[in-house]
Image (cartoon, rainbow, N blue to C red; front, side):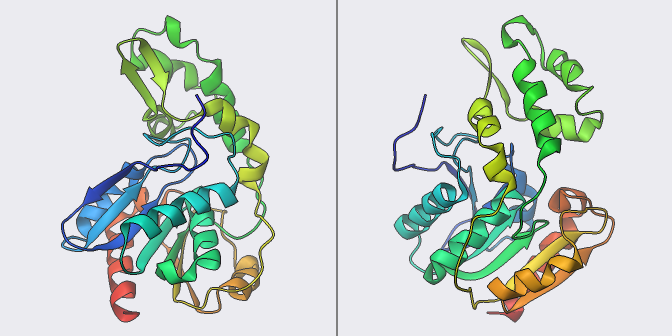
Length: 262
């Protein structure tokens, strides 16, 4: 079912007291992907957000970055009394960039993880989405059955485990939490980057995985045009899922950077 025009996002809170960090996940993820990092940043409190069409948040007809950023901005406006450190990975990184550009008063500092403000070929995720949609959920008995059916499209067991976190068993049977059909229909927009004006003048940390090709130094001029105070840090030994590959490094880098720019 489609959610209402005003989307109330599901969140998970880590820690007590005023929120310092707000985390946004990537395509087919959910807020809890950031749990390890948020716990490492305690006693600072965090909100882990399920973006629209993911996790426990509503499904919507509009899967654009403008719509996602608007939903996050509404959440921050309604729940936070002071600007936060906004952290986003991949798709969530693009959402976070738009929030900072369009609603700078809500964002004290911005951390963008392994994504650039540029169009990107999303064929890898097209393959994943098509494989997930092809599974007849009425005919699987266990999660292992679904894992086996995804093995051709996603031979890496770590990637399959990531994709299968969105599969849940209910009283009515197995179902996907993410809006697979909506995301597949909107994949071109998700792979793209909207036309934007202006700049965000707050501090920006740009984390890139050493083994990932999602961020290149050729994209640094475009990043600096939008975010003049950007600092690029390449995390050794990390692929695209930087925070999963090197959680201790990511947590320490976020903590030190946030302290230095306070």
